Image 1 (cartoon, rainbow, N blue to C red):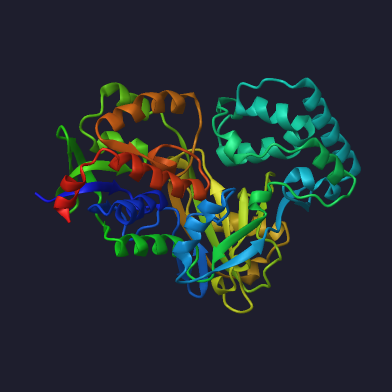
Image 2: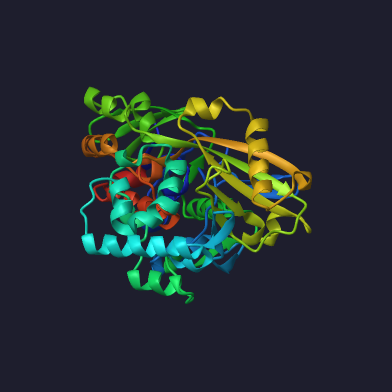
Length: 450
Protein backbone atom coordinates (compact mmCIF):
# COMPACT_ATOMS: atom_id res chain seq x y z
CA UNK A 1 0.00 0.00 0.00
CA UNK A 2 1.26 3.46 -0.87
CA UNK A 3 2.41 5.59 2.06
CA UNK A 4 2.72 9.38 2.36
CA UNK A 5 3.92 11.68 5.10
CA UNK A 6 0.77 13.75 5.34
CA UNK A 7 -2.81 13.14 4.36
CA UNK A 8 -5.16 16.14 4.47
CA UNK A 9 -8.90 15.61 4.75
CA UNK A 10 -10.86 18.48 3.22
CA UNK A 11 -9.95 20.94 0.49
CA UNK A 12 -11.15 24.25 1.89
CA UNK A 13 -8.69 27.07 2.52
CA UNK A 14 -7.30 25.42 5.67
CA UNK A 15 -6.61 22.15 3.91
CA UNK A 16 -5.10 23.85 0.88
CA UNK A 17 -2.84 25.98 3.09
CA UNK A 18 -1.70 22.86 4.93
CA UNK A 19 -0.92 21.11 1.63
CA UNK A 20 1.05 24.08 0.35
CA UNK A 21 3.01 24.37 3.60
CA UNK A 22 3.84 20.67 3.79
CA UNK A 23 5.00 20.46 0.21
CA UNK A 24 6.77 23.81 -0.12
CA UNK A 25 8.50 24.04 3.27
CA UNK A 26 9.08 20.41 4.22
CA UNK A 27 9.22 18.80 0.79
CA UNK A 28 7.39 15.72 2.02
CA UNK A 29 4.83 13.56 0.25
CA UNK A 30 1.42 15.13 0.71
CA UNK A 31 -2.03 14.01 -0.39
CA UNK A 32 -5.16 16.16 -0.06
CA UNK A 33 -8.56 14.46 -0.31
CA UNK A 34 -11.62 16.56 -1.16
CA UNK A 35 -15.11 15.05 -1.25
CA UNK A 36 -16.46 17.65 -3.69
CA UNK A 37 -15.85 18.04 -7.38
CA UNK A 38 -13.49 20.96 -6.79
CA UNK A 39 -11.52 22.40 -3.92
CA UNK A 40 -12.37 25.65 -2.16
CA UNK A 41 -14.88 24.87 0.59
CA UNK A 42 -16.80 28.10 1.18
CA UNK A 43 -14.50 29.88 -1.29
CA UNK A 44 -16.40 28.85 -4.40
CA UNK A 45 -17.58 31.13 -7.20
CA UNK A 46 -19.95 30.43 -10.07
CA UNK A 47 -21.18 32.24 -13.15
CA UNK A 48 -24.91 32.27 -13.82
CA UNK A 49 -25.05 33.55 -17.36
CA UNK A 50 -22.80 36.64 -17.18
CA UNK A 51 -23.16 37.24 -13.43
CA UNK A 52 -20.57 35.85 -11.04
CA UNK A 53 -21.48 34.95 -7.45
CA UNK A 54 -19.34 33.89 -4.48
CA UNK A 55 -21.61 31.04 -3.50
CA UNK A 56 -20.21 30.53 0.01
CA UNK A 57 -20.94 34.09 1.11
CA UNK A 58 -19.06 37.37 1.02
CA UNK A 59 -15.30 36.94 1.53
CA UNK A 60 -12.60 39.60 1.32
CA UNK A 61 -8.88 39.71 2.02
CA UNK A 62 -7.57 41.75 4.93
CA UNK A 63 -5.48 41.19 8.03
CA UNK A 64 -3.97 42.91 11.05
CA UNK A 65 -0.76 41.15 10.05
CA UNK A 66 1.09 42.35 6.95
CA UNK A 67 2.90 39.02 6.84
CA UNK A 68 -0.37 37.07 6.77
CA UNK A 69 -1.77 39.34 4.09
CA UNK A 70 1.31 38.92 1.90
CA UNK A 71 1.04 35.16 2.29
CA UNK A 72 -2.51 35.23 0.95
CA UNK A 73 -1.89 37.69 -1.87
CA UNK A 74 1.03 35.78 -3.35
CA UNK A 75 -1.46 33.09 -4.36
CA UNK A 76 -3.34 35.68 -6.46
CA UNK A 77 -0.36 36.67 -8.59
CA UNK A 78 -1.85 34.86 -11.62
CA UNK A 79 -5.03 36.97 -11.67
CA UNK A 80 -4.11 40.06 -9.67
CA UNK A 81 -6.31 41.88 -7.20
CA UNK A 82 -8.15 45.11 -6.57
CA UNK A 83 -7.54 47.26 -3.50
CA UNK A 84 -10.66 48.84 -1.97
CA UNK A 85 -11.37 51.27 0.81
CA UNK A 86 -14.36 49.86 2.65
CA UNK A 87 -17.76 51.44 1.97
CA UNK A 88 -20.12 49.56 4.26
CA UNK A 89 -23.46 50.39 5.78
CA UNK A 90 -26.07 49.22 8.28
CA UNK A 91 -29.71 49.52 7.27
CA UNK A 92 -31.51 50.98 10.26
CA UNK A 93 -34.68 52.98 10.77
CA UNK A 94 -35.28 53.23 7.04
CA UNK A 95 -31.82 54.54 6.15
CA UNK A 96 -28.21 53.52 5.65
CA UNK A 97 -25.91 54.17 8.61
CA UNK A 98 -22.13 54.15 8.32
CA UNK A 99 -20.42 50.97 9.54
CA UNK A 100 -19.21 50.25 12.18
CA UNK A 101 -22.30 51.50 13.98
CA UNK A 102 -20.37 53.44 16.62
CA UNK A 103 -18.80 55.73 13.98
CA UNK A 104 -22.05 56.19 12.09
CA UNK A 105 -23.99 57.91 14.86
CA UNK A 106 -24.19 61.17 12.93
CA UNK A 107 -26.49 59.38 10.47
CA UNK A 108 -29.03 58.70 13.23
CA UNK A 109 -31.75 60.90 14.74
CA UNK A 110 -30.57 63.03 17.70
CA UNK A 111 -32.60 61.07 20.25
CA UNK A 112 -31.00 57.79 19.09
CA UNK A 113 -27.51 59.29 19.23
CA UNK A 114 -28.20 60.51 22.77
CA UNK A 115 -29.42 57.08 23.85
CA UNK A 116 -26.35 55.35 22.41
CA UNK A 117 -23.95 57.81 24.05
CA UNK A 118 -25.72 57.57 27.39
CA UNK A 119 -25.52 53.78 27.27
CA UNK A 120 -21.84 53.76 26.31
CA UNK A 121 -20.91 56.13 29.14
CA UNK A 122 -22.92 54.11 31.66
CA UNK A 123 -21.28 50.87 30.49
CA UNK A 124 -17.81 52.42 30.77
CA UNK A 125 -18.53 53.52 34.34
CA UNK A 126 -20.03 50.25 35.49
CA UNK A 127 -17.29 47.98 34.09
CA UNK A 128 -19.51 44.93 34.41
CA UNK A 129 -18.03 41.44 34.11
CA UNK A 130 -20.15 39.57 31.56
CA UNK A 131 -20.50 35.80 31.52
CA UNK A 132 -22.08 35.35 28.08
CA UNK A 133 -22.36 37.08 24.72
CA UNK A 134 -25.59 38.92 25.52
CA UNK A 135 -24.18 40.35 28.74
CA UNK A 136 -20.96 41.23 26.90
CA UNK A 137 -22.83 43.31 24.32
CA UNK A 138 -24.51 45.33 27.05
CA UNK A 139 -21.30 45.61 29.09
CA UNK A 140 -19.12 46.82 26.21
CA UNK A 141 -21.49 48.83 24.03
CA UNK A 142 -24.21 49.95 26.43
CA UNK A 143 -27.96 49.62 26.28
CA UNK A 144 -28.58 51.96 23.32
CA UNK A 145 -26.21 50.38 20.82
CA UNK A 146 -27.06 46.90 22.07
CA UNK A 147 -30.77 47.25 21.52
CA UNK A 148 -30.67 49.41 18.38
CA UNK A 149 -28.28 47.21 16.42
CA UNK A 150 -26.11 44.53 17.98
CA UNK A 151 -28.72 42.37 19.68
CA UNK A 152 -31.23 42.26 16.80
CA UNK A 153 -28.46 41.68 14.25
CA UNK A 154 -26.80 38.87 16.18
CA UNK A 155 -30.12 37.20 16.95
CA UNK A 156 -30.94 37.32 13.25
CA UNK A 157 -27.56 35.87 12.30
CA UNK A 158 -27.01 33.23 14.99
CA UNK A 159 -30.62 31.98 15.37
CA UNK A 160 -29.48 31.05 18.89
CA UNK A 161 -30.23 32.67 22.27
CA UNK A 162 -27.33 35.05 22.78
CA UNK A 163 -27.08 34.17 26.46
CA UNK A 164 -26.10 30.64 25.35
CA UNK A 165 -23.11 31.91 23.35
CA UNK A 166 -19.82 32.05 25.23
CA UNK A 167 -17.16 34.77 25.13
CA UNK A 168 -14.44 32.67 23.51
CA UNK A 169 -14.82 34.23 20.07
CA UNK A 170 -15.58 37.92 20.60
CA UNK A 171 -12.01 39.16 20.99
CA UNK A 172 -11.09 38.23 17.43
CA UNK A 173 -14.36 39.09 15.71
CA UNK A 174 -16.14 41.98 17.44
CA UNK A 175 -14.07 45.16 17.99
CA UNK A 176 -14.26 47.12 21.23
CA UNK A 177 -14.90 50.78 20.29
CA UNK A 178 -13.03 53.60 22.07
CA UNK A 179 -15.45 55.96 23.80
CA UNK A 180 -13.59 59.00 22.41
CA UNK A 181 -14.28 57.85 18.85
CA UNK A 182 -17.97 57.39 19.59
CA UNK A 183 -18.27 60.91 21.02
CA UNK A 184 -16.46 62.38 18.00
CA UNK A 185 -18.71 60.47 15.59
CA UNK A 186 -21.83 61.56 17.46
CA UNK A 187 -20.99 65.24 16.95
CA UNK A 188 -20.25 64.76 13.27
CA UNK A 189 -16.47 64.25 13.11
CA UNK A 190 -15.22 61.72 10.55
CA UNK A 191 -13.96 58.67 12.41
CA UNK A 192 -12.99 55.22 11.20
CA UNK A 193 -13.01 52.03 13.23
CA UNK A 194 -12.16 48.38 12.69
CA UNK A 195 -9.31 49.87 10.69
CA UNK A 196 -7.50 46.62 9.81
CA UNK A 197 -10.52 45.91 7.58
CA UNK A 198 -10.78 49.48 6.27
CA UNK A 199 -8.68 48.57 3.23
CA UNK A 200 -9.31 45.15 1.70
CA UNK A 201 -8.34 43.19 -1.40
CA UNK A 202 -10.33 41.03 -3.79
CA UNK A 203 -9.32 39.02 -6.89
CA UNK A 204 -9.65 40.83 -10.20
CA UNK A 205 -11.13 37.83 -11.98
CA UNK A 206 -12.69 34.53 -10.97
CA UNK A 207 -14.32 35.68 -7.75
CA UNK A 208 -13.05 34.57 -4.37
CA UNK A 209 -12.48 31.08 -5.75
CA UNK A 210 -9.43 32.50 -7.49
CA UNK A 211 -7.71 32.42 -4.10
CA UNK A 212 -8.50 28.74 -3.56
CA UNK A 213 -7.38 27.93 -7.09
CA UNK A 214 -4.17 29.87 -6.54
CA UNK A 215 -3.30 28.04 -3.31
CA UNK A 216 -4.12 24.70 -4.93
CA UNK A 217 -1.93 25.46 -7.96
CA UNK A 218 0.98 26.50 -5.74
CA UNK A 219 0.57 23.38 -3.60
CA UNK A 220 0.63 21.13 -6.66
CA UNK A 221 3.62 22.97 -8.14
CA UNK A 222 5.40 22.33 -4.84
CA UNK A 223 4.71 18.60 -5.11
CA UNK A 224 1.41 18.07 -3.25
CA UNK A 225 -1.19 15.79 -4.80
CA UNK A 226 -4.84 16.89 -4.73
CA UNK A 227 -7.70 14.48 -5.38
CA UNK A 228 -11.28 15.68 -5.78
CA UNK A 229 -14.45 13.55 -5.69
CA UNK A 230 -12.60 11.54 -3.05
CA UNK A 231 -14.75 11.42 0.10
CA UNK A 232 -12.98 9.92 3.09
CA UNK A 233 -14.85 6.87 4.38
CA UNK A 234 -12.63 5.58 7.16
CA UNK A 235 -9.54 6.52 9.17
CA UNK A 236 -7.91 3.73 11.16
CA UNK A 237 -5.10 4.24 13.66
CA UNK A 238 -2.29 1.71 13.21
CA UNK A 239 0.18 2.62 15.94
CA UNK A 240 2.70 4.97 14.33
CA UNK A 241 0.67 5.55 11.18
CA UNK A 242 -2.89 5.79 9.91
CA UNK A 243 -4.79 4.13 7.11
CA UNK A 244 -7.22 6.33 5.21
CA UNK A 245 -9.87 4.82 2.98
CA UNK A 246 -11.50 7.10 0.45
CA UNK A 247 -13.64 6.85 -2.63
CA UNK A 248 -11.48 4.97 -5.07
CA UNK A 249 -8.62 3.87 -2.88
CA UNK A 250 -6.72 3.74 0.39
CA UNK A 251 -3.41 5.06 1.62
CA UNK A 252 -1.21 4.94 4.71
CA UNK A 253 -0.14 8.24 6.27
CA UNK A 254 2.28 9.19 9.01
CA UNK A 255 -0.02 12.01 10.07
CA UNK A 256 -3.43 13.44 9.13
CA UNK A 257 -4.62 17.04 9.08
CA UNK A 258 -8.40 17.02 9.48
CA UNK A 259 -10.33 20.03 8.12
CA UNK A 260 -13.71 18.45 7.33
CA UNK A 261 -16.62 19.23 9.70
CA UNK A 262 -15.77 17.93 13.17
CA UNK A 263 -19.31 16.57 13.44
CA UNK A 264 -18.46 14.06 10.70
CA UNK A 265 -15.46 12.65 12.58
CA UNK A 266 -17.41 9.91 14.44
CA UNK A 267 -18.55 8.46 11.12
CA UNK A 268 -15.06 7.99 9.72
CA UNK A 269 -12.57 7.82 12.62
CA UNK A 270 -12.72 4.34 14.10
CA UNK A 271 -10.80 5.00 17.28
CA UNK A 272 -12.79 7.89 18.73
CA UNK A 273 -14.04 7.13 22.23
CA UNK A 274 -17.75 6.87 22.97
CA UNK A 275 -17.47 9.97 25.17
CA UNK A 276 -16.01 12.02 22.32
CA UNK A 277 -18.69 10.78 19.95
CA UNK A 278 -21.39 11.90 22.36
CA UNK A 279 -19.80 15.31 22.83
CA UNK A 280 -19.43 15.90 19.09
CA UNK A 281 -23.11 15.15 18.56
CA UNK A 282 -23.90 18.27 20.59
CA UNK A 283 -21.93 20.69 18.39
CA UNK A 284 -24.08 23.32 16.70
CA UNK A 285 -23.62 25.42 13.60
CA UNK A 286 -25.82 27.86 11.71
CA UNK A 287 -27.00 26.68 8.27
CA UNK A 288 -26.99 29.27 5.49
CA UNK A 289 -28.56 29.98 2.13
CA UNK A 290 -26.60 32.24 -0.19
CA UNK A 291 -28.83 33.88 -2.79
CA UNK A 292 -27.29 35.32 -5.93
CA UNK A 293 -29.20 38.09 -7.68
CA UNK A 294 -28.11 39.48 -11.03
CA UNK A 295 -29.98 42.66 -11.89
CA UNK A 296 -29.93 45.12 -14.75
CA UNK A 297 -29.18 48.11 -12.53
CA UNK A 298 -26.26 50.36 -11.79
CA UNK A 299 -24.58 48.88 -8.69
CA UNK A 300 -24.85 51.06 -5.59
CA UNK A 301 -21.58 52.47 -4.33
CA UNK A 302 -21.53 50.14 -1.33
CA UNK A 303 -19.53 46.98 -0.78
CA UNK A 304 -21.83 45.32 1.72
CA UNK A 305 -24.69 46.12 4.10
CA UNK A 306 -25.84 44.65 7.43
CA UNK A 307 -29.58 44.29 8.07
CA UNK A 308 -30.58 43.84 11.73
CA UNK A 309 -34.30 44.44 11.14
CA UNK A 310 -37.15 42.13 10.25
CA UNK A 311 -37.92 44.03 7.04
CA UNK A 312 -35.49 41.71 5.22
CA UNK A 313 -34.97 37.96 5.47
CA UNK A 314 -31.21 38.37 4.90
CA UNK A 315 -28.77 39.65 7.51
CA UNK A 316 -26.04 40.68 5.09
CA UNK A 317 -25.95 41.64 1.43
CA UNK A 318 -22.84 42.22 -0.68
CA UNK A 319 -22.52 44.03 -4.00
CA UNK A 320 -19.97 41.78 -5.71
CA UNK A 321 -19.80 43.94 -8.81
CA UNK A 322 -18.28 46.63 -6.55
CA UNK A 323 -15.60 44.13 -5.51
CA UNK A 324 -14.74 43.56 -9.18
CA UNK A 325 -16.31 44.93 -12.36
CA UNK A 326 -15.67 41.50 -13.92
CA UNK A 327 -18.36 40.02 -11.63
CA UNK A 328 -21.23 41.40 -13.71
CA UNK A 329 -21.94 42.41 -17.32
CA UNK A 330 -21.80 46.06 -18.31
CA UNK A 331 -24.93 47.76 -17.04
CA UNK A 332 -25.62 45.05 -14.46
CA UNK A 333 -24.96 44.37 -10.79
CA UNK A 334 -24.18 41.14 -8.99
CA UNK A 335 -25.51 40.79 -5.42
CA UNK A 336 -25.34 38.01 -2.85
CA UNK A 337 -27.66 37.89 0.14
CA UNK A 338 -27.03 35.65 3.14
CA UNK A 339 -29.97 34.06 4.97
CA UNK A 340 -29.34 31.99 8.10
CA UNK A 341 -31.63 29.26 9.45
CA UNK A 342 -32.33 27.66 12.80
CA UNK A 343 -31.71 24.11 11.61
CA UNK A 344 -30.80 22.04 8.58
CA UNK A 345 -34.42 20.87 8.38
CA UNK A 346 -35.58 24.48 8.16
CA UNK A 347 -32.96 25.18 5.47
CA UNK A 348 -34.14 22.20 3.44
CA UNK A 349 -37.80 22.93 4.01
CA UNK A 350 -38.00 26.14 1.99
CA UNK A 351 -37.89 26.15 -1.80
CA UNK A 352 -35.45 28.11 -3.93
CA UNK A 353 -38.33 30.11 -5.38
CA UNK A 354 -39.55 31.09 -1.92
CA UNK A 355 -36.10 32.20 -0.76
CA UNK A 356 -35.49 34.20 -3.93
CA UNK A 357 -38.89 35.86 -3.67
CA UNK A 358 -38.25 36.96 -0.08
CA UNK A 359 -34.78 38.25 -0.92
CA UNK A 360 -36.01 40.25 -3.90
CA UNK A 361 -38.87 41.67 -1.82
CA UNK A 362 -36.36 42.77 0.82
CA UNK A 363 -34.02 44.34 -1.73
CA UNK A 364 -36.95 46.17 -3.27
CA UNK A 365 -38.16 47.36 0.12
CA UNK A 366 -34.80 48.96 1.00
CA UNK A 367 -34.52 50.55 -2.45
CA UNK A 368 -31.67 48.57 -3.99
CA UNK A 369 -33.55 47.10 -6.98
CA UNK A 370 -36.98 46.58 -8.45
CA UNK A 371 -38.27 43.06 -9.04
CA UNK A 372 -38.45 43.81 -12.77
CA UNK A 373 -34.66 44.49 -12.79
CA UNK A 374 -33.78 40.88 -11.89
CA UNK A 375 -32.23 38.86 -14.73
CA UNK A 376 -30.86 35.83 -12.88
CA UNK A 377 -31.29 34.33 -9.42
CA UNK A 378 -29.78 31.24 -7.81
CA UNK A 379 -29.59 29.67 -4.35
CA UNK A 380 -26.76 27.73 -2.74
CA UNK A 381 -27.25 25.94 0.58
CA UNK A 382 -24.70 25.20 3.29
CA UNK A 383 -25.42 22.93 6.24
CA UNK A 384 -22.48 24.43 8.13
CA UNK A 385 -21.72 28.16 7.91
CA UNK A 386 -21.11 29.58 11.39
CA UNK A 387 -19.87 27.35 14.24
CA UNK A 388 -21.78 28.21 17.42
CA UNK A 389 -19.65 28.98 20.48
CA UNK A 390 -21.64 27.51 23.35
CA UNK A 391 -20.85 25.43 26.44
CA UNK A 392 -21.25 22.22 24.44
CA UNK A 393 -18.53 23.37 22.06
CA UNK A 394 -16.14 24.18 24.90
CA UNK A 395 -16.68 20.78 26.53
CA UNK A 396 -16.32 18.92 23.24
CA UNK A 397 -13.10 20.59 22.14
CA UNK A 398 -11.42 20.11 25.52
CA UNK A 399 -11.94 16.38 25.20
CA UNK A 400 -11.87 15.69 21.47
CA UNK A 401 -8.94 17.80 20.23
CA UNK A 402 -6.33 16.12 22.51
CA UNK A 403 -7.78 12.70 21.71
CA UNK A 404 -7.50 13.26 17.96
CA UNK A 405 -3.96 14.57 18.27
CA UNK A 406 -3.09 11.48 20.28
CA UNK A 407 -4.15 9.44 17.27
CA UNK A 408 -1.90 11.45 14.95
CA UNK A 409 -4.76 13.58 13.62
CA UNK A 410 -4.48 17.37 13.79
CA UNK A 411 -7.88 19.11 13.49
CA UNK A 412 -7.83 22.62 12.03
CA UNK A 413 -9.96 25.32 10.46
CA UNK A 414 -13.44 26.76 10.74
CA UNK A 415 -15.12 23.37 10.82
CA UNK A 416 -12.24 20.99 11.52
CA UNK A 417 -11.65 22.73 14.86
CA UNK A 418 -15.06 24.47 15.09
CA UNK A 419 -13.62 28.01 15.05
CA UNK A 420 -15.27 31.10 13.59
CA UNK A 421 -12.26 32.66 11.89
CA UNK A 422 -11.44 35.39 9.40
CA UNK A 423 -9.85 34.19 6.19
CA UNK A 424 -6.31 35.16 7.16
CA UNK A 425 -6.61 33.15 10.37
CA UNK A 426 -8.07 30.19 8.45
CA UNK A 427 -5.01 30.19 6.21
CA UNK A 428 -2.67 30.45 9.19
CA UNK A 429 -4.40 27.56 10.93
CA UNK A 430 -3.63 25.43 7.89
CA UNK A 431 0.06 26.25 7.93
CA UNK A 432 0.23 25.74 11.69
CA UNK A 433 -1.53 22.38 11.38
CA UNK A 434 1.02 21.20 8.82
CA UNK A 435 3.85 22.33 11.10
CA UNK A 436 2.36 20.48 14.05
CA UNK A 437 1.60 17.33 12.10
CA UNK A 438 5.06 17.08 10.57
CA UNK A 439 7.20 18.04 13.55
CA UNK A 440 7.72 14.40 14.56
CA UNK A 441 7.65 12.83 11.10
CA UNK A 442 10.90 11.14 10.13
CA UNK A 443 12.01 12.79 6.87
CA UNK A 444 13.36 9.54 5.46
CA UNK A 445 10.10 7.74 6.14
CA UNK A 446 8.11 10.63 4.80
CA UNK A 447 9.99 10.59 1.52
CA UNK A 448 9.18 6.92 0.82
CA UNK A 449 5.89 7.94 -0.79
CA UNK A 450 7.39 10.47 -3.20
